[in-house]
Length: 173
Image 1 (cartoon, rainbow, N blue to C red):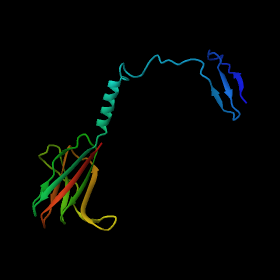
Image 2 (cartoon, helix red, strand yellow):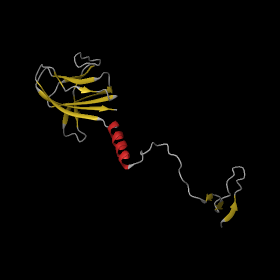
Image 3 (tube, rainbow, N blue to C red):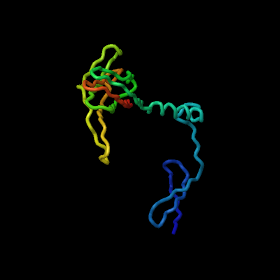
Image 4 (cartoon, rainbow, N blue to C red):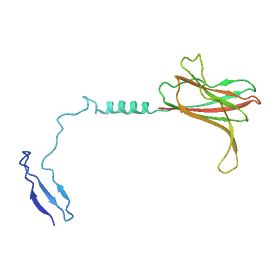
């Protein structure tokens, strides 16, 4: 059963609006007039289709992480490095190293000028990982953390044999 009442809004100076009281004691108000927006917080033209497309592209560019997949051939006893990556737009990095042989070591190197390279973290060696079904194994190594300088690269070394090393570098905002 619906009851009709008027709400006196004398203090606010508004006209009374009817409301409906449902049997579950919830109130539903009826709109008595249309609403129009006089001012917008957006600058002129911001809501146009062209500007919305530009805004969407700018957001996508900001959220775009950087992925690199690179193969490096290692000769026994020779130090090799991956390509240098500019990390100035990123906060974190992640490295996955996979090799075809065994016994390789790797280390993330950092530089502010691409001339003087520093390695603040100790080197790591790849280790054998077995797949979930127990059928295959891979030699894998990982490293991740905060970016420490503008440029980074991965130094790779194998003292016992030649192998091909795949390095996946991910830079994150």
